Image (cartoon, rainbow, N blue to C red; front, side, top):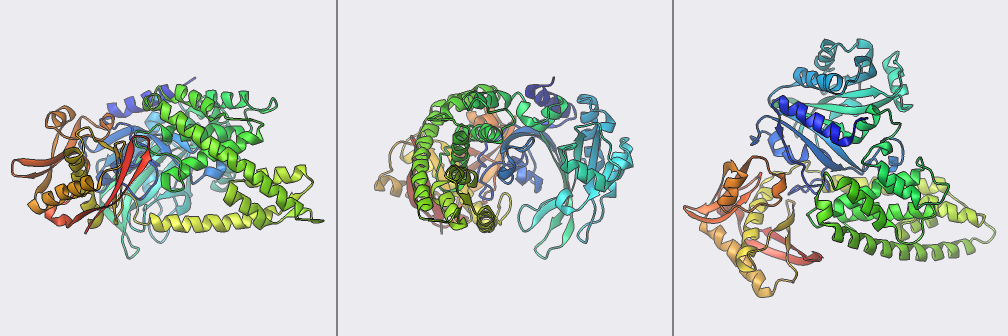
Length: 595
């Protein structure tokens, strides 16, 4: 048996021996990246370096990164899909490319993990009008001894990554599949068919960033070609141990056991609802446990968090779980995940408080929605089918999923227009998708002139709060778009009008000074001695960038940061605070602009 801890250690040890610098596990809440709500891959913390900026750890990197993805949320509950998962990754920033990346992947899979060559197949990009068929990757696999019959060429939808926005780095990828059963495919068509049947499980993906898509839609060769790989920890542990699903892994099995133990007596471990609760509660606890203050709300990360919790509650009711249960599940999550993520234990009180609060709110909504449904059914008269719009109104207003509405209708001898509901749901999801695409169309790590100015202004705001309000103030979270900065900090009270004015004046005086903004590479200890502010010190590598805002020897701000920044504060314009509000107990939020 191989545990999650074993796989993490094997992976990082292997790549460190191959001269890869070790990256710490970054926050689930991306720092200063308005284009995504959560860290969805190990690449997020290093996007500026994929674009050419030198990394303190060098050109070869590796990490284990916690991730949240909601794109496949409707698939959660099957054997393999998860909302929260851990990703093993390694990168080459303009160093090695396809041949070497594939050789490293093959060596780790076969020699470190002991997977027989014949137990995995690979896919490569089939080519189209934008880029040719990736024969280079296929030949690299052949050179490792993988037979041609197990190398398959698939279209862009299966074997291409990016760009994250309308333009930017992108390229073909090559995916590795483990043979869950000892079955050999006869052709590419047979491989695709068997994959859908669960014979093959994807465990690793090497993204080969070879091109840059420009504004005219052309795919041009990149000067710096990068490799970005990702291996799902839970999936790999599952297949190596011969498990039929990820819920048997050591980081999920105890949570599932707890869910089943408090469910109706006939609930089994293959129950879709039990698995959804297991996944969603783990995701919710991991988000609530972050040092950055995210709590359930109706927008952005808070909305996703609320969805995880409320979906868990709905499925709990379907399993016959009565009363409050979220805290008891969270206790198990903290026991299981706290070994790798000590912040869960440190923030346990907040996790429990927010779960209990949200559970109470939604339990009330369930009661109200039930009464509304009963009135709807009474109004149907001789009709025996609840219309799609009424079912969808219950979903939007009270969070009732179709299965709960159908179950409650069935108990009273009614049916639901499920086809009509699904059509309305698809329309709703399409509108949401378009909205999200519009919101995040800038792609990963927007480094526009506007966001660059606001990034520097955030450093000045941080220091201004320390100078004007209290020296103990430090950053709890930050989000920057082209329109505004949002800064979360530890403080219990609303700032007075005088404090707001003094903070604005402090920042604007530094802007008028025409102070220079530049960075120095140094160790974390050297940064501390130099008085640099650090946001999340556990994340930092041995060598860090310390940005200083100074006029000669007079230093206004000094902070550990990856950039981007202006060269001189005169570029910022006029700084103005537009709003302040409470985020959670002991955490305040400021929104500001530069004009």
